Length: 243
Image: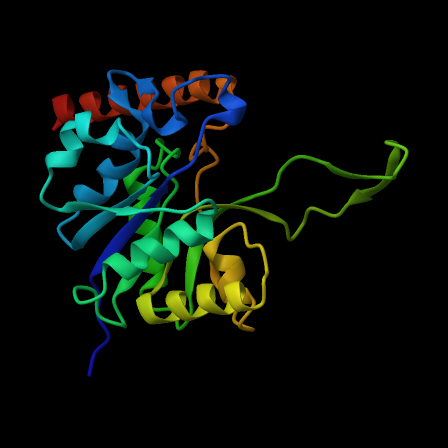
């Protein structure tokens, strides 16, 4: 029997805006007339093979229901937790009875509004044939320094095989559930889904993605995202006019 090719999306969105110096959670900040999270979800809803999206919210979230996106029949919500891994597990739990064990799950940060359609296409097309799954990532291009306890340079780190993990990260539903449960049982604090899968002794595939797929973390990220989205929208308009 052929494995499933459809996918679901889990968007952990229970975080706060501690480093944004804002009273508004970063996923609800506005970029070019739309909230960050609306930009983040849009590329998935543009694809016919997206079975649905689960947005995982904080218990005290009062902003989600005000978005037009909350009325989209393809988008559901779940209650999240204090840690990203807990929120992702809660999102997966909400899909039980709908998602099959071999369906793909794409986990994407709510605060990554600049995911391009071409990067998403490349991830899905590449990873669908992989036994483990994979993630978008960008090669490290900066020179990296390791510091000593005194704050001085201890060594220069070889960057030749280093990548920055991005999202989406794409794994089969059953495997991702198993990996996250294993990490929890080991009391291991993970920072992304790939790390949980790696703890099982598996090797996810790295798929080259654009460094423009940034995560909104500090105020200057918002300004950079504005610029990236303005260029993307402008390019889309020019392509449409030229067709």
